[in-house]
Image (tube, rainbow, N blue to C red; front, side, top):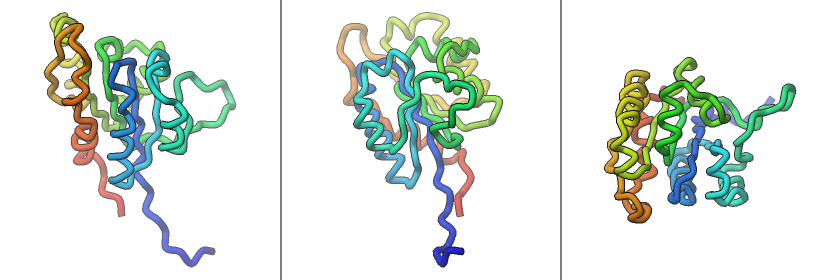
Length: 184
């Protein structure tokens, strides 16, 4: 028996990252979550792995980055999610998710999150040519109908650079916080 009082369970955030030029700054979101006394684990789309510093993120979170399915019997490397932030969310991921396509671990987790009732926030990141495609608006509408929290986003011009200066990583936490139970 320990003399220490029970520590409250920390909120565990899954940070799902997609292949976009700004994803190398995902540590900003992890830092913001940790400042709120949340724990975080990262799930990357297969293409996003080439855009991030895996060792640095794993050192920051204390968890391995997940990108592939576990084999049967393999232990779960991350605790269950209390909340999910998809940042940056690309055109491809948004449209596949809304269509119910589960061909990567990241998409599989997102598709199941709806059924589990896990609060999920999305910070889109795409260019205006992609945003003009009718499937994108339909996908956002479908995700909103599912209760997904989507921040308003002004797409950047195609071939005009990243727009990383305007990307507010902590906005995912601002969207999620009111959806979470208060921890004692």
